[in-house]
Length: 65
Image 1 (spheres, helix red, strand yellow):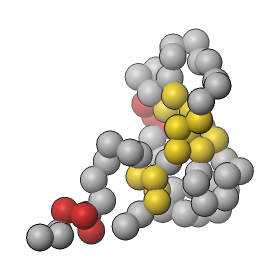
Image 2: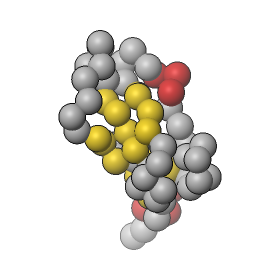
Image 3: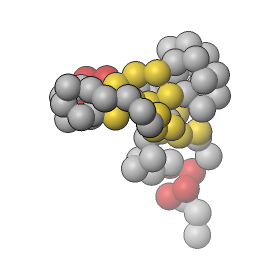
């Protein structure tokens, strides 16, 4: 099972998009949402951890019976 980006509370963006943090290194944050859709990241640029967003399915999970 892959780790998942963690939503960070307390930040306000102009479009109301969420700020996400790497749960592994806790050093990298980015904005992703309707106005920042090009910021969809599959890994942390800081530590290289493979990550999913909370709404994404892990291929390993879909293979479970």
